Length: 279
Ligand code: RP5
Ligand code: MG
Ligand code: MG
Image (tube, rainbow, N blue to C red; front, side, top):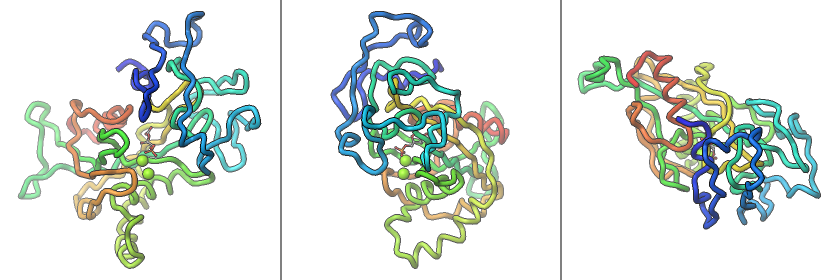
């Protein structure tokens, strides 16, 4: 797929704001384009100054390309440019300036837990895809409440939080609904969750996410890690329940035809290849 496509979606998510159209040949900043007039938009929810958002530039000059207190403003992609106090999206133009729905100027760091198992028939035998003859992997997918698209149950890294904890916390909140559990219920699950995330996992991606919320000055980056239940006796038994920003949760067969949120299917492709599974 072309780089950074969803970050150029005509209608900015959750708004009536339309991006200035950017075709592939005008994507890169190196290409001079005098007629480029991006729309400026920062969502009201961000301007309200919630704890997870930066203030507006002007009164605020953070340390870009650095660990700024507890906020990591370094990019996994490259050292990004800062022009007139504002970070510049390393993947090119998006047709929109400001922060849109994102809280941070520059990179907004997330983590994506890809929890997988082999698809099995009623006898417990691995199911092979008819054409590729390769075993089919399944992953825990959530339906995002914001846009209705299916996605990996990922989320933002809190300031100072270790990515390994974000992976476990977001999976628990979105796919197991631990936010709404009593401490008794949580205690019952916690050992199994801890066991699943105790292995290091397989890092399948680290970098820019082609997220529809991206702007010229703010963008999503992630670390995607695969936690795999080889024998089907650990995660497979976890009681899935959607929570927080997830409306539904389900085991979904991994296949190249899957249409997922942002660039999530690229991360699943790497996962499938690494596990020698059907794609
Ligand atoms: C995507 O947005 C990331 O890959 C991650 O899945 C997600 C994080 O944002 P929220 O789920 O917190 O909205 O870019
Ligand atoms: Mg979340
Ligand atoms: Mg999320």
